[in-house]
Image (cartoon, rainbow, N blue to C red; front, side, top):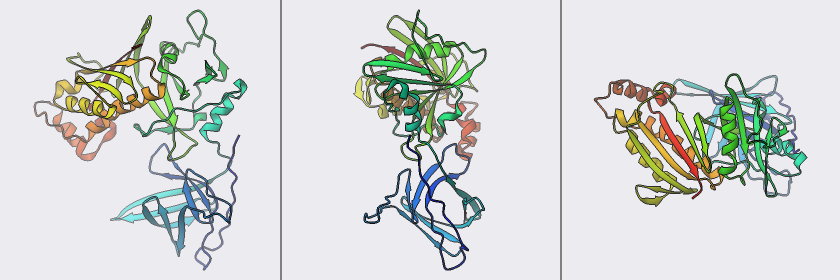
Length: 381
């Protein structure tokens, strides 16, 4: 198991001529985000979510950190971050900015012995003498991240040679008499699911149905390849029901439906999904981006299209699960796009309220005005 090795830095009086010398691993936290960014620093040169070279003969690329008096200056990707700073007794660097009387605080918290998600999962499958490569998304569509250890229930689905394995809370499951024999819960329980890149959608649907039937609330996970490698990105799936009839699986979900939970379906948008970024939209083969645009254009028209539309996806069961998650990410992004789209239906009694929420960017309540109702029909093509 790979661990970070850190050098504890010593700060003398930073108002003196000696500037602080930073070395170590930091979690960079700001706002109310569930995720953070990792900075690895060596001799006041920083890399985000990556190591800084240690060989003095090498040219150590990294973003420089400089100090002047009580100010810190960091080349942070494409900006120069300038702020006032102080260092507390635990070595935490607290930076403060003030733009137009708006104060913002960022904390750089020194950490030791952090474990990344890759090592966490490989340790979980080590008894099977195999490795695990978690699926990844190219963007985060939901803004939630978590440490794997924070979930009491977890399911790992992976491959050893050509065989699929399922590990539920550290126990290897066996499928017998049409069941994985997972304990039924009296009330809803969260479960975080990790799926290897080699797994196909058809290898997930049966156990997904059993988990749903037994009152588990589904959270899929994917790699965080940009901000930090210690957390995973969470993708929540609000499943209403799953039905399996021979080779056809039907999954009904409703995202952001708390305010408008049950509505008569007036319109159905039909799409056929062949593989990653290959789908049938308005009788043309195109990509997920155009599928997303088509849904946004339809839903934003009026109250009926906004509240009474079902998105029906006919999906190839042999698609890689990672590509399926990519599709769900694009569908989920429909809601995000609608939040910033001026809502024009003057006959809708909710219009004024929606526009006020859009103007103040009240996202938490605004996304409930645009429910996403999905019916997935998963079958072999």
